[in-house]
Image (cartoon, rainbow, N blue to C red; front, side):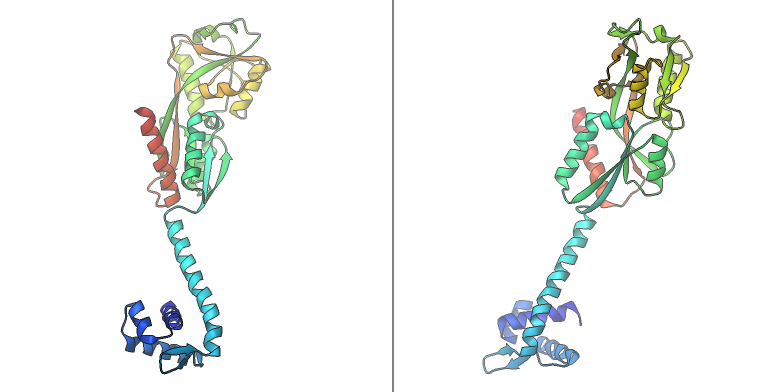
Length: 299
């Protein structure tokens, strides 16, 4: 039994006339009659009782019509579901982000716009360091990931520019320079720097160390922090000073102050990583919105 047999049967049942049903279906009356007879032979029952003016459902036909309508509705629903999934309108999107990326307003704006455009897609969010996120992206646990873009691009990963973010100094309030709004980086040459481990966040680590070297000194390596929010807390506990992306200044912790770097143009790039040449529609939709927002912000 095929779906077309169900459609033919229901059309005849609705019209109560084979000729009118054939016209409605756009096929000839003899082939339709043959298909109905074939269906009856397959089921082993008569579905219609012929009358002088057309046909009427038999008791078996009445019973069959109930489930036939449900089967056809289920088939239509299955087709629509498959088509929606194929367009990326349903399903689940797995998004990763680094601790520093989570504070950038571009990230929250992008996720908000995606949810508004594709409300039937459920989102899962996972935080991790850059190395973890790229590994999860590679093994399929993530579809996209917000990361700090370094100089190297791992094989199989595509990066989409999101934003360039300035870096700011974070100092304990007890620091002699804490009341200054702008501080030359060289003035912190003797202070220990609280950093994330390089293997966890190579880009952020290299930007900070590189900025110190450009300023004329090798940074004193202080206490390592497990995540970016911990950097601010460790600075508050007077473990040292640090540089953080400007959006991290939203973290208002008692015992720290933020300051600009005097005569310094230190910045870090935020990118959206995805697998190269992905054919997954929901991922492509997310990237399309990201590209649109990025292009709009440049105009």
